[in-house]
Length: 369
Ligand SMILES: *Cc1c(COP(=O)(O)O)cnc(C)c1O
Image (cartoon, rainbow, N blue to C red; front, side, top):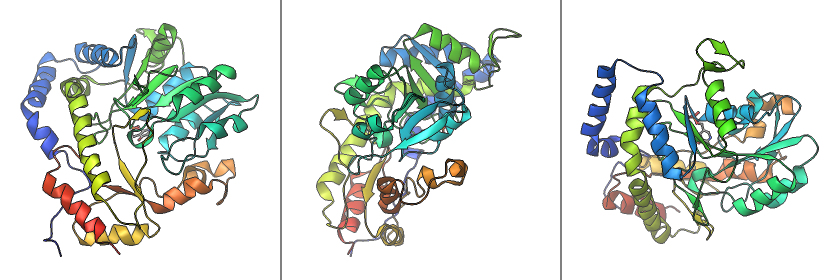
């Protein structure tokens, strides 16, 4: 038996200790500026983020859910419309659709990559279909060539949920730059995370940028002039300042995640554990390292007993969530999403993870019987 060790599912300590002085300076400069909403920090971060993607515009917003919702709303999605979303994702993707009044229509995913299956999308398109929200889940991009062909053929809007894919690419092109809008979350645990809630939208469409910016600020383009019944979803100066500190490290951190996962993929050898697959065209940024196991709950307990933290992403598929009872789905409607919900387990993966920790997780997994 290996000597007992504690390996958390995730920790910020090691990432933040390296940039602590820069974060402290950012905090002080915002406090000293006396300006906390919609100022220079936000504008500078938006410029830096747009430049990272080589897109024309970036709009900072309050969180990732709003980034998707505001994009759809600005694209004119409304009650009576249908929007196709993957059957397996975090609930925010489908909730953002529901907030516009439109109906989320779930489309099954591949079991090996966990991503939306474009060959099935076409069978779900009808006159009511107005948009697709693709999700680049766990750090890997969906099959964008096939998806872009569909959106062209059927004149559908395309929003990319990039909450788990900052810096991921498909055939060398960055996630978020394929659709009308790329929606990002900077929830602390994401590959690029704020120290609180935050989000952003990138786009090359000027009219869309202006409309999203207005919708996120009470529907206003000019103080006290309200064109639309908008929301309050602004990126605050403190979070923008922290994000500006972290952005230059994003590529390096993504590379570190890839190195950790390379070791997992090489080291884990247990026929009870199914490893995730990355398609050749994709550069995965590994937001999550998701394995599958028929005895998932027993595996989770076993790892816990051995000091290893894990998380299930996600235990209940969306079509069976209370939030969507109105859609009248039942168990069996999306067998692949249901299978993933029953078998998925995410392993520890964080910046600063040591060789010893990685090897410990591999050894303990290989001893599972
Ligand atoms: C985190 C996440 C969101 C929502 O982001 P928030 O900032 O928490 O609102 C949306 N979609 C996916 C796939 C996510 O992982």
